[in-house]
Amino acid sequence: MMFHVTLEPAEDGWIVAECPALPGCVSQGRDEKEALENIREAITAWMWAEDQKATRLAPSHLSSIVVAV
Image (cartoon, rainbow, N blue to C red; front, side):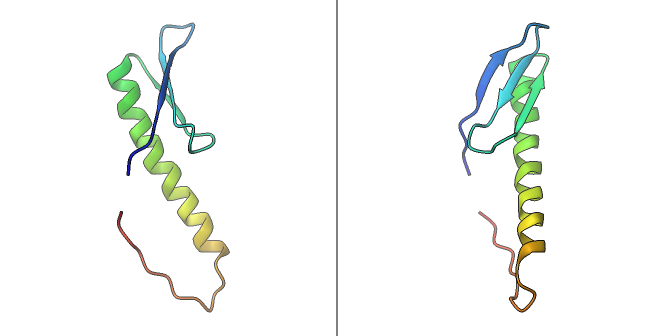
């Protein structure tokens, strides 16, 4: 999967990375490279957390299958 990410310098010199498609998915790094590494990790964690929420909310009579994308 691919996501657009915004990078913005913070007042403290760090770079803030945000994935607008995933509300609240934000990270930062000391430089652009680290910010991008960290937002990749944040995107993975965001998607996992959303999947866990959806799994808990699914009706118990439905079976669940994991699909890689």
